[in-house]
Each structure stands twice: as C-alpha cells, then as structure tokens.
Image (tube, rainbow, N blue to C red):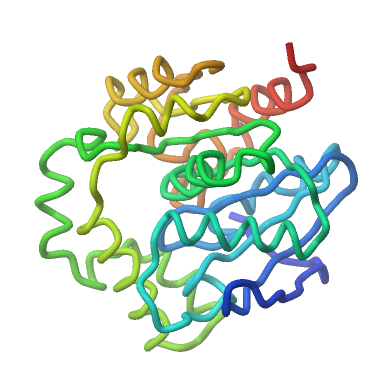
Length: 263
C-alpha cells in the first residue's frame, strides 16, 4: 500500500481560532475533499487524490484535532467543521467549489451545503448518514463504551506517523467519539434544502444501512445514487481497504458527475 506523501503543498490558515492544515493540488474548478472520522487527507483520499488533481484544483483539509491540524480546546461538531471549511474557502478567495465528503466527512459536506449553500456547486456524499437509524443498533451500542483501543490500528498508526503525540491521538478519538455519542437526527427539511446536484455513494456491504442511503438519495431534490461493491470506503481506496489493487470504481463515476454540465 503506497500512501507516500511527496508533495510540498501543505499550508496553514487560521480560521475561527483554528490553525487548519490544508493542501492544494492541481488546477481547474475547486474540489474540496473532506476526510472521515479518525482520519486525515491521506487516510481517506491518499490513493485517489492525484487522480482527481489531474482535472481539478483539489483542496484537502485536516479538520480540528485530525492529522496536522491541532485541537482548539472545544468539542467538535459537523456544523463547526462546515463553518471552518467555509472560512478556509473565504481565506483562499474561492467563491464556490465542489465538495466531496466521506463517512463523517460527508456529514460535514452536507452541513456545508445546508449552512453555506452559496459556496457549494456540487456535492458528493459518500457513506454518510443524517439520522441515527443510518446505523444498525449494534453500532450505537459499540459507541457507548468505545475506547482508543477500539479504534482501527491503521488509523492510529497513520495519525502517529505525521503527529507522533499520543495525547493528541487520544484527543482526536475523544472528540470523534463524543460527537457520535451526542449525535441527534437532522430534520428532513434540512436535507431537502440541499438543492445543488448531489451524488450519493455507498458500498453494498457498507456500515451505513442501504435503506438509509436510499432514503437520503430520495430526500435530496437533485440527486444521483451509486451503490458499489465492497465495504465502507473500499470504492475510493480508504486506508482500511487492504486490497490495494488500484481498482477504485467510484473515481470515474465521481469524475463524470463533477464534469457533467448542470441542467
């Protein structure tokens, strides 16, 4: 598995009191990549980022307490993460962008579209949820008593590889766990307010219930749906996909969606 980071594109911007790490790759219409929980830019998108950068100005972000972005001493929320990305786009003088979020990053992407719709041209929502019913009951039972030891080892190792600070790793886990434990359903009207073109993606063996993915797709006014073989993130080569065979079927589908002219 090659997750090597050879670029020198990294930078920081102070947004809403947060020293946010971001990278910019390629040229073209902006595409913001929003990583999942317990992750960073490369954990989620490391295998496909360079492909997207061939046709897009890719902006990868590390959210609060993740990757190279430090914690700011307050709880995280999908809403705050969305506001942070909005502030980063303002800092970069980007008036509008396509947004792609995976897992919890998809929740953040949806909140960006809800709270800052003028910034979002198109949205890709990958393996995400907006109600607790998006997961089977075992998931929430697991979350009640989860510890750092419960966190997948590849995610822990990836964090420590770029931020060799055990205390920071524990903070990231605490922030993500607390956010999930406190999650309350979003209203249907909020989802219906996401009126820009949307692509909803999930794996046929995803941790997100297929019925929920279908419900989300039907709730969005202008959406396409794509269910692909595999589990949570296999289709984009997320770090826990151990196949590493380079066959990431979501990529051409996402490209076609992003480059298609709006109706």
